[in-house]
Length: 224
Image (cartoon, rainbow, N blue to C red; front, side):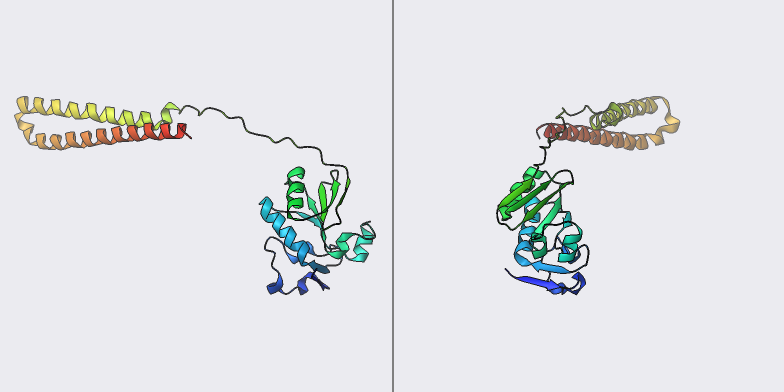
């Protein structure tokens, strides 16, 4: 079981640290800054982090003998060997956390629900403390899709644009006929009105396309 000891975590060579989700400062003694690196324990800790896919908040890792005495640790605490970690349960379900920790090879478990953390170590296999109470898993209610507000509806907007443009194009065509028959002095405007009619027809076609797209998109969303 390879173990490396340094008088302070800042003395750890950066190129030897291979646990990407943890820093030497997190693993070091909170009281003295000294660090004992047990590579097997840290490999399992990284494997646990990878398995859970969320941060592990370390309350305590390595403890120097003097710091262990100061915090009231057990005389033969695994923390002094660098093979134990106290992990906060604030962002974990304790049952799922314990199952994952056992799966990656941790054997010793201490439960501290009042303090909000779980102790894990390399063994021997044992456990102590009061189990964490079961946590309910909240699920959001599954609701049907809300109806679109009419003023924000893509279907309404597209259909409205198509309808308005169609009516406008028809109106321009009628106006052309009237001007051609009764207002010879402004007949030069008739070609421009013809262009306007085609513009309005194009807007109508775009509005129809938007309406069809919105209908298809709403149908697809309803299939998810």
